[in-house]
Length: 267
Image (tube, rainbow, N blue to C red; front, side):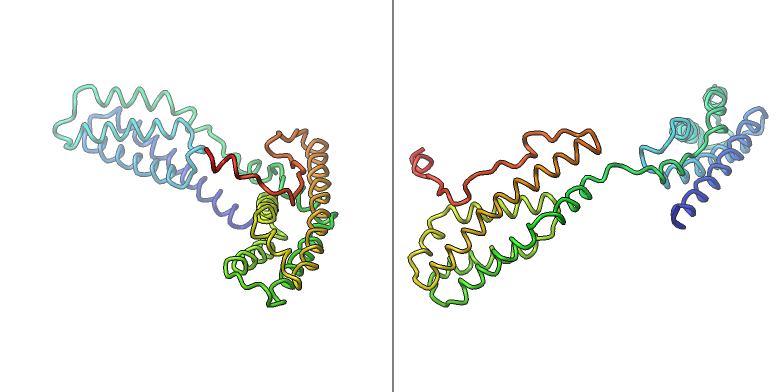
């Protein structure tokens, strides 16, 4: 357990002890006729309860703590002056506090089990599968081919040059990224190689052989992505009994198949 976790637990328990002392003091004051004391101890319990609540996440706040804040806040709003206590408000507060006292006093904070509990690390599965694949080398090979295309100096289209630069930057940034960034960057590559601008690069003599080499790597990456996805899916089923949904599985398609936009343009 980390030092910060231990410190947090200590603060929570200290505030809880203050809460219990303040609750007992208010219950005692409510049985007497000292109206000023009732207001004072009520406001103190309200303050302590709010302090305890403020350091807890919403889902960690027990019902008895929430009820304490509601009850004492209502009493404070109804009774601003000890000389004009609202009739029946003290008795109503007493009833509410007596009903929650047992839970408030006996509550045990189980942060140890929460701190020690380990959820399923799905990203770790992807990282493991990725290390056992050739994906990083294939991404590097694609990056090298794209940089070689630019280095020829034969591409005179500013739009094509900027598109290639963006593609290179995307591959470099995401080649060792998460599952999502890897899949998204791969889809970005495939969409780029389906457009007419990419096809036109084949007409440039110095670029054409590099383009062919890139497309060969693209096909190899397509196969490797499918293997990677299958390995991830297998590990998820084996370790966590999780069956990947269709939306999360990889669909192998021809990355070089040009999109037919004619029908879309006519719509």
